[in-house]
Image (cartoon, rainbow, N blue to C red):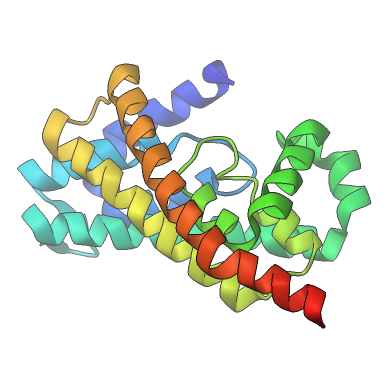
Length: 218
């Protein structure tokens, strides 16, 4: 996979100044679809470039905080487009076809089943949380599509979670530059997991438990 993605990443780094925000949006859409292209190598270089010298948006130069805000929007919209593709494909194709042919497009059965367990365990909150975690991030549209989750809710959770993750990556790009090390990402992952644990506990206490009680009562 590394050998396959490396030429694409080198092209991205050399094309970022000219491609600007539409290029970021395109690659974030790819990251959320069938190709697990790491968002950690997409957003931070763009954030660093936008902070230091600005990036073009159809002829308009955006820099500083304006550039960071535009990158958050580009990342969220791109992720939503890619996730929508996965959602629509899975909803139309159905589980048997996804499990049978997914391995040919980087989606082996064990990953699909893992995403299904995640969605079954955490419900709608899992869509939001998945945007902040590796591996599950680009797969969560599959179980959502298979079970025919309401598309409006799926889109809302996807956009909010993707915007938060893009903002985190923008912050890293501004603070430490465009080349994010594994150690920095590890520390950020710990912070995000702690954040999700708190939010998840609140969700379980205030929403999920109440919904289960109402379901049993009916």
